[in-house]
Length: 628
Ligand SMILES: O=C(O)c1ccc(O)c(O)c1
Ligand SMILES: [Mg+2]
Image (cartoon, rainbow, N blue to C red):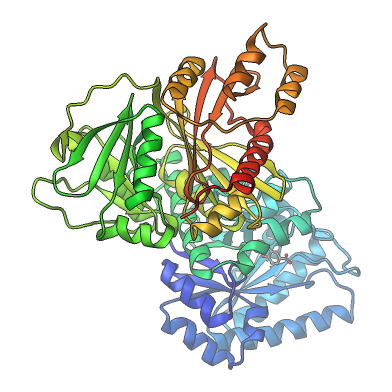
């Protein structure tokens, strides 16, 4: 299987695009004519430059408004085609994409178009070139791959085939299984794009909102399953028109693209085991049984403050590392590692971000498999030298320099706590916190797709719909990713401005990622009592908030007073009820949350977020949160 990507899909000038594409591991590019014209270099030089980077030109595109024209426009269209054939020969590519005509004078008529393509095929054949016909979803007469196929079939020329583009077919809700009727050798090229399901004009949707397979809502896997069932053996190419990607970092976007394509083809291979095609061999997506540990990089007085906060949250220090300045804080199934090392990865994370979550450990069935899949999908393995008596725990670099460790029972990795840590012997009753409910990561809005793709291609996780969270100073988009059993949940919060609570955290921590950790309790009221006894200072909520709760929900008698007295927030969904208690913001805007989910409540209290954020901001502006 050859991978390819259209040069429109990423930002930069042509050499920058090519470098990012080659580095991400693609085999070829679709050269967009605009990218060629904007470049100052002869077609021969451009062709040589592309090949010198190890890339092949899989396609030249687009050639527009060709078929079905009356004379003299028709003759002109053929002349134009001849000029482009000259250019293709100079560049060194043999396939051109002709997209269905949008010309106001195009006459329509399947046989007229077929005759035009037959003649174009004749002219292409003389030069050893081939022509592919693609139905644009907004084409004037042809906007459905089934009609494009009928024209190609009637054109009846060896050098004329169809080009399929998942966006055009799926955006029009054409059943992808109709592709299974097309002979594989008549499909000359396949373009892939996903898109979020939004109601809008097809052309506008296509030119601005396409995204990588798996990042949107279209049935791209079903589309590719149908394509592969035909026996198609040509390149699989991303063609992504997206405003964010056009201005984003080209290397990251190219890597995301490659990751999406490899993961998609792995899904296709699993869904269609009877089809023989080559794609990267890798273990299936890993399930995640939960967060095994969260590690903070910190130092000195900040570390003391963090540990004091953990104590008020009911944690106790249950162990110390045999050689390093790490302490282990536990409660229920929760493990927090406080890392005060002044060398190594945690130390550089501290130097970069200040006190921050530098490492997340996930419990998985097979840690080696999780790393093997991540590597196939372009993640870099992460290793640090291990000292005597320490375990080598498989790990990868996440995005933005983060680190993820994988812990399993099968290979004894879950013994790390007894092997590498000496027990303090301390026994503690705690405050009823049982496990980590979710991690909330903050990022710039432009990075959200990369992160969701990262998690959903590695793990068995589903995306929830994006929700808007209103910060008094701007909007924050929030999207939850979760395993089906809810044992691993992450929320991604995308900030567009630095004035929001989330954006401010990003700026202050130079792009640290985890802004809060949420712990579960089975009884939020008794947890709140125990926390109060330990001197925990909750985030104070306003009276207005509780007055509104009374209006919105039928709470049992006395409940409202109990909520208000303990500063507990409340929400309901069709499944059940949700209780939340927040800490005050800590260094740079990090905080902790405690939640109780009753009767299968599935959300994250999004309706409460604006009031929580306003309360945090009141505190940070008023008393001033001690910053580093
Ligand atoms: O938006 C367009 O015009 C356009 C051009 C070429 C393509 O392959 C395509 O899918 C869309
Ligand atoms: Mg296309």
